[in-house]
Structures are given as structure tokens and as C-alpha cells.
Image 1: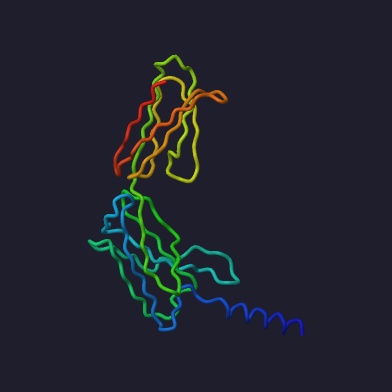
Image 2: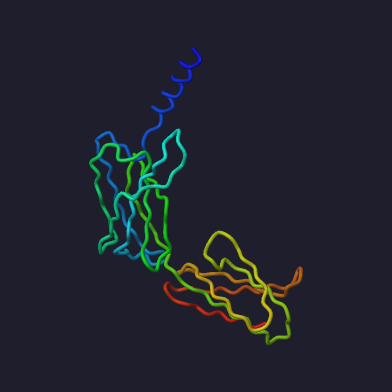
Length: 203
């Protein structure tokens, strides 16, 4: 009796697990447009990787398989129709173009797969500190890598640091004495795409 109950439970769970790219009409359509952050211009020749997960509902997570690589057209658009009713348990997309930050794990679902994808262009920020104001020890803080956190570093003397980051946006840089409750100066720097911006801090 115990084994029958367990079998029934597993059957119900399995039937509730719908493949991510399953459609009743037997087709899975993937379409969308890829644009550049900050300008909104469409990006051509973006590689769209269609990937399929090998993991099952009751099995371990495994590395996905590449099904196909699509390219966006001159208008930044891509389109693909898959006839297979169940072409995988869970499918997802990744996007890449040289000079732009990679985007991964865009899930394909059953309700519609028309995507608006915005790629962040690469940029570089060079910070140079010049101690010409009699201060010995300086802190510099900012979202230098373009991620989710703020980095703080110390600078003594004439120093340069180069940060790969995201372009077409402003970055706030805070700096001041490396002492508690010291005065903080805030600079705003615009970072154009695909270029290196140098910001000099005199202290």
C-alpha cells in the first residue's frame, strides 16, 4: 500500500511538471529584438544561443546543450519556429555580441516568447589620483565594475586604476579623506560606449 501511494504521488507530480517550451499546437516560436542600452539602436549580428537543459524534474541539474545559434538581422530582430511539440524540458536563451556584455539564462516559456533584449555596451573607466593638496591618504568609492555592489579602495600618491564597466551611462564617484566622518566629494562621470574615460582626482 505504501508503494502504491508513493507511485501515485510521483505520477501526479510528474504530470504537473509542464515542459518550459511545450505548446499545444506543437510549435515553439522564439522572436524578439535586441537593442543597445542608452541609445535604443537595434543591434545586428547578435548571436542568440538557443539552449536546452538536460536536467529532469527528479534528476540533478546538468549542463545544457546548444540547439542552435541564431543571428539578429539589420533591424536587431530574430525569429525561429520549432515544429517539435516537446523539444526539451526547459529551454533558455543567451545573447552575445563583441563589445557588449553577455546575457544568459533567458527562459523560454509556454505563454509567448517575444523578447525585448537590451545589451550593455562595454566601456572603460580610468581613475587617476594626484595628491597636490597636502592629503596623504584617500579613499575612492563607486560602482566601478557595473555590477550590483560598490567598491571602495585606498589611494596614496599618483595612481591609476582601469575598470572595465558598462557604457552609455553616468557613474557617481565619491572620494575623500580615509578617516571616519571625513568630508566626501561626489563627482559624476559619463561613460560613452566602447571608449575609455579618464577621470582625475586632485586631492
